[in-house]
Each structure stands twice: as structure tokens, then as C-alpha cells.
Amino acid sequence: MNSPGEYLPDATEGITRGEDLPKAKVAQRSRNYRRRPCPECEHSAYRDRVVTRTLHDLGDLKTDRPVDVKVTYSQHYCSRCGIYFNADMSDLALPKVHYTHRVVAMMDQLCILYRLLRCSATMFDTRSANSTSSRN
Ligand SMILES: [Zn+2]
Image (cartoon, rainbow, N blue to C red; front, side, top):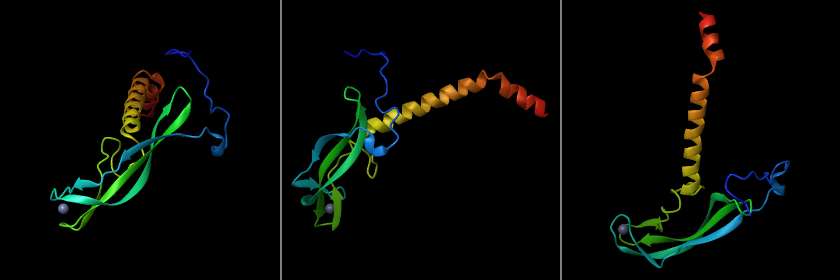
């Protein structure tokens, strides 16, 4: 049984070809509705067609595999406004983004951590302080 903080080797270490990487686990989600209110006029708009979108999610630590979320969603047509729109899936991801909110939040945290580490490393790096003073 794995415990938090236990070191586990990276299963992808040494793999040089992309096709040899572990295949993604696919999780299905549905945002498929017969009718949705139009975002412009709130008129109840019929479903025009059904499409799918794949979002990359955080990997599964237990199986050591990436996770893709396959979202089946409806596209609707408002006969009043003459516009097409998608069923809302803002709970999963932003429009036209290939990653879930969870991935984006994790990337934000890693960027903040990286900046903090880089900043603190620069503060305590005596070589950079000496090199700037020797140029003058
Ligand atoms: Zn409308």
C-alpha cells in the first residue's frame, strides 16, 4: 500500500518514444440536453446536434496513467436570435481550453511555487551579488 510521502519510481522513466507511454484512462462526462435556454434571449432552444470534446485531466496516481475526460455535449440553435451555442460545461473547463480546471489550478500552483523558489534562490545566491558589483 502506498502512503503519502513514500517515494515511488516514475513508471515513464527511460521511455523515449511517445507511443510507449501509458495510455490515458478515459472518463466519460455528459452535458447533453434536449433543450437549453439561449444565453442571449433565454428562449428555450432545441438541440441541433451532439458532439464530443476531450479534456486532459490530472493523472491517476494509483494506476500511474494520464486521464482524459471525454465530454459529450449538445449544441443548440436559437430560432429567435439565429445563433448556435453549446451546453454549459464551465464546471469542467473554459471554452477552447484542452485542460480541466483541476489541471489549470495545479499549473498555477506550480508556477507560484517555481517563482518563490527562484526568488528565494536569487536572494541567497552570493555569486549573483558579487558578479553585479564586479561589473561596476
Ligand atoms: Zn436567443
